[in-house]
Image 1 (cartoon, rainbow, N blue to C red):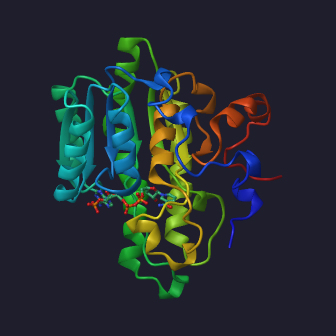
Image 2 (image 1 turned 60 degrees about the vertical axis):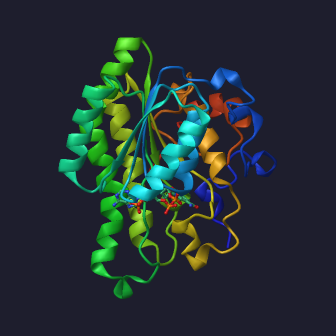
Length: 297
Ligand SMILES: NC(=O)c1ccc[n+]([C@@H]2O[C@H](COP(=O)([O-])OP(=O)(O)OC[C@H]3O[C@@H](n4cnc5c(N)ncnc54)[C@H](OP(=O)(O)O)[C@@H]3O)[C@@H](O)[C@H]2O)c1
């Protein structure tokens, strides 16, 4: 079943949907998307969407990348793939649990000491518990979804916003945060109470980043598309809806952080929306203060 219109599914119109990487967001085809010297952190970078984001940045002239997940073997594969694209990129492979405050705090100290800057934080690690009605859910699994999808981005923001802001000021630019949300934040999907709530709360966290750090940091909530990954393929309700490649979101993230996107800060944006079409809608979006969660009154 397709999401309802109020989910923003077809916000840019049915003729302007994208399902795979395309020239405007591909750094191979659009060299102006290169981001020489930047340092990028991606959580959940061992597989799926996070892996694709890491490999797309490897093409973009960055100087350093921090890849985070628990599965060390998956991170090793991603590290090798990054090095195969550009062997001069400094890669910090960090096997940790994103729910751990101590681990995240220590990582932030290591990044400051080893890289001295952070230009882009992508809070991408995510999980979903099994989709069931409330009485049938497992309380531990339900809360784990909130911890990974909401608490973990908070921990990374708490520890790294000062470095993101100081990097922006030092280089006279804006740093970027992409909080990997979901279209599920925009409507209640039967059975997915923890997942939808966790992403809705993440969208609110995005607005707080802009409220407190908006001078130096651009922050958006992103929907990566419906992608057949380990997470999404395990949900039978999503059968037939996983029509997007992980490379779509990989390219979209590079486009998003390539500069001049401050006007999108604080908003929910889908990687499936054609970016040229989205830019053409800028005036209307700003005038209506669109793509934010608000009461309809
Ligand atoms: N796929 C879709 O259609 C879709 C749609 C909307 C939104 N999203 C969002 O996109 C993001 C990426 O999901 P995906 O589909 O690429 O899923 P995936 O292939 O299952 O990848 C999830 C990543 O998150 C990491 N992760 C999970 N729990 C972790 C923990 N406690 N500590 C550290 N890392 C952890 C996993 O590594 P380890 O398990 O090794 O730790 C893995 O690298 C998620 O936030 C998801 O909600 C996906």
